[in-house]
Image (cartoon, rainbow over all chains, first blue to last red; front, side, top):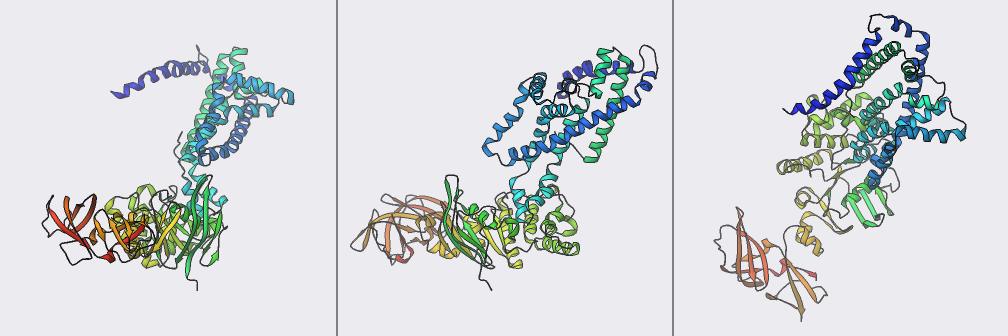
Length: 248
Length: 346
């Protein structure tokens, strides 16, 4: 009987995701007729360029988040002691303010620096928005690592750097994988930040938005969305297969 | 040849505003099974971490095998440590856990194989069966053995054990106690064993340091610690002990139970006379101290009877052979030799 408790969410998913997705799929094939025209239209060098743009932006964002988040998570998990919960709240605190509002706030910070509508502005905005999604899973995996495992490595003769490479890093791998997935996927499809801070920097997100809402070309927009989803789905499947199980 | 594996000279360590250990002086002989025994929070783990280099003393100096190591980091000390929570590496299999210290030392592959095999055999784990196993596929006792093998693989100058048996059940604990003793005889390494369990310390150790509130109360063999405790704390902490408050009068002792004869009196006016339950004999009128008592409680312990006998306001625990037929409220005659009583300042 208990699995019926999952029913409300499944119904929710059906109405707000699977059915809309089916509609998108139908539109991509030229609903109400049937054609592959829209797929052939979007598979040109322009889409490829935009896709590469998105890939570059998502990769840089993910890499920066990882490098910025790791020391923070490490500190909170292993060194902060009684300040642990307070610091975690500080990490989560920005979530209490609307995502759009935070992006507007970044605009007022970037304007005096003369960075508005540049690529660095987009990266700064993205890293700012996505950093907690990297810190939290990293924290969760580092928290499970006990201080005595690091001590054991020292006593066995491993210097701090070796200890990090041989113990800390391998044991935090599930967190790194989860963090990368949580940041990379949304960053790849992101359109609000590039649209607000990047001016003409086109990403998959911004051109999908343009196709649907500016040019009202639902068919081409749908085809682009389907291709994008297929690529992401494929990439993530390969990534998870290769890096073992994920823990969120 | 150095005589001592570990020497601590006037070592002090404080955490923010709490003094963990104060003026610790210890000389641990090479090849010795040495225990540091004390209640939780007494600073015994701090001493172990100071020896390992996981903590550094505020004052004093530490020598390992005669070499000054006071400010040497842990990865350059070559000590082995078995942690309370074992701290095995879950991402490595049994073989790689044991090989860890050797890999870090860039030992050639062939030697690593030989040494890991040897260490697993010492702790009675078959290298063929267990080498490839993951840590979470092992029982608690097996994990314990891997932790010991891992610490021994680097041929440490001293093996530090931080309450390693705390998490095991009673039966396994007794088994591991004799195992540890056996392993120590095989490898002949100096063992420094931290515990709050007096039976572990008494059974395994060559010598014991009893520690309380960050200070060493007494260092000695298990028999010395038990028979001639240096302080009231040691007398009370190790084994069972009866304490009788008394006053010194004209070279004799007067207490609530009457006059008492002891072999030595210290300078104090008010004293505590300590006597072990098993030193109290029943029905021997020739003893130095003989009293008439009423039995309040009898507990049958198989080979022994544990009694609580009252003399006026003082209740004494006695341990006697269960051959005797003794019942509650029975009047008995009990006594002890003057030499068996120990006198402490009250």
